[in-house]
Image (cartoon, rainbow, N blue to C red; front, top):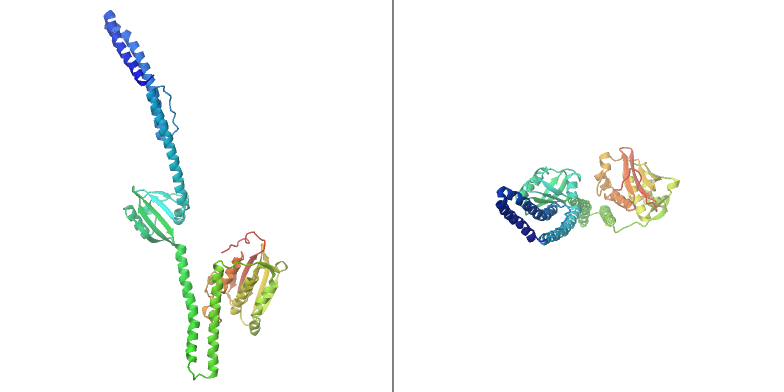
Length: 450
């Protein structure tokens, strides 16, 4: 039955009530007519009202379920007008579900992009309450993934960052504001959101600034290292242009010029080697070779100088460490640099020991001397470029300050590590560990690659 038919039925009940009331009033008086007509009218009205209310109540409940996100149940009323409304609700529910799913996918994609960004992203509402902060922002600010974060206005301790937050919450954009956050240099950019609130982007510049400082120091160090021999060469060359210099003085000046030129050549060669290794253009060609043979070949270049100073070399090679898997050329350079460094500090009549022993799944080759030793505050930095424990002594003996840096890079290129032990007035031990040729295990316990 249509909705119109049900309304007609209800109207008919009212009319019937009136007719029966009139007829009953004529025959039995007004009270008797009411008693006859009222039950009939109520029955008809109840039937019409119930048949219309039930599907409308069901439709109302389905609409509320759609609004709250619950799964709706759509009634079958048998009333064409109500069924049209139910079908419209069903289509609307399907469209809303499809759009909600599409928005969910888009949001998931956006969240994934934000979460994988290396920049920290923080969004807040108009009162400064943080709505979202990606993992990079939490790592940068020192908050765990599930830790509560304070309001944006109190999030930063640095005054420059707090000023930037006040500006953006007031509706102004902030560009490239560089701030110091607990020792880390961060570039802060912020802009207000269209419906109040703000979004902040934090870019960690610590490594960039550190590399810039390293570059500046490197240029300054190279300039300083080249300036001394160049000044010496220029001064002696200008003096040689005077024809009144006797032959002995001329020869002494020429010797000084040649020595300084060779010093610059060693510096340039070391810089080129270091650049080639650090840039990744060099990879070791590993062979299994005898430790004693390569160490002996490296010592040959220092034998005469050591004999003149009464310095002896002692070889201590363990039977299970007689061979090592290395690039022969690189290994000779490593040992040569260590011999040169040891001879610079070992006293006359001193002793240098080359020791080879098995450590874990590799071989450790160490060069030990009984020289003046290195103070503890310098020990962790001796593998840095141009770092010298005794700058004057090193330069006087022709050192470039790059030898140990080259040693470290060559050893690490083999997958190994290098470390040092020293005690003042007792000597120094520099140990290089090389993994076996087919070893895929980790470094020895307590050791990490730098």
